[in-house]
Image (cartoon, rainbow, N blue to C red; front, side, top):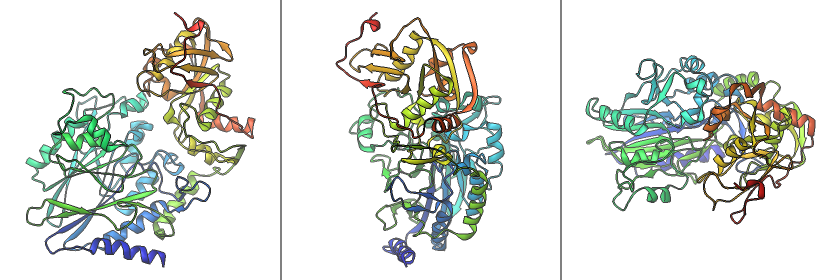
Length: 552
């Protein structure tokens, strides 16, 4: 009954207000699936009694429902904005093949490339993408050898629905260069998003004579769209700075404002969904994006004037969630055929995942108090323990989930650390160690997850002289002493702003050939019940004065 009532609500929402003049184009979209095609629990809604989500099989039910409403004046598209496989076992273990198989089965029309696609070598990625029965789009990934677009993507496609020509352009965030292993992207370059999208919007508008332009981009809206927009542009919508100094790639809000000729941008990358589209007040480009891990499916209906073949408005389902439809299993009964195929893949990928490896005395949250969290502190403690280091550190974004109090399984740890980062250690002087910390409190940066040290810093002090007190192993910092530091191969290759780590001589580095996930497992096996606390390892004090050893 609940499903029938929901179906009626969805249908009535979109039938209401229909006129003979308007065509309807249903845009269904996903982004940042990260392998989340399997069933999961919505712990983000209620960690103690989470509702059950149906994953790809529930999405299939909704997709088929929307397609069933099609006719001469109604059609649909199904699009994905990248980061499709790395994050959950069924995606990670199969290197994305299971997710591509699902997307083939339900009939995606196009997908763009996300930064996490390059968590595996491009040779492996190419094999996975070769299985796709739909176009892979990106207009700004260039093959270094030839200087041309990589052969496994197209810059755009042209589709026709209801006599309307639709150009779909894909792009990938240039942040990929900062967030990927150099070895995995050694064959490619990521060129400026704005220049690339502008080039192909002009092509599809003026050479391909399309009626509607959709940009499918792995880049998102800022969390606070209003204040961010107002801080960038004046009252007339002009950029406040003649040059752009941002260290990150162009986001979807900037593309919407500064590239004319786009009707709709489907974005992602930041894992925040919006219930209705952001509409630029000057260009009138709409931007939509959803949450992550397959928890929802986006759905917006474009109204199209059949005479001019231009977008005249939009409609959303009559649900509290707006265009972000949470895939509750009891509302969207999983499609049996799709469900069977996914579960077969899950069974193979998750063998041994429910083995209990230890326990936690507390709920280990990843919520930060300054740069500390119970989960982050546990991870860095595990890193330091595994290689007997003096100091261990991890970037704040490297912690992906909580662990509840009680028994802890390998699956729990996989969710915390879904990426295949390897544990490394290196020798360095105390002076270099301090520079690592100073780099992560410079400017507006918020620090590191650390273990083995006691750091006090002041944001009122000049950059690279903000650490006012530093103790290592309980002893005062010595700039000339040689310390052993533990981190991940991802950071050692200069990611997350730590480019200075590329200066570490190869002879001072030890590759321990252990996955960070397994180091965490070992820590739980050795120290359960784990009783991590928020302590004095990291403290911001803007009134702090340098201790004697920190004085020049």
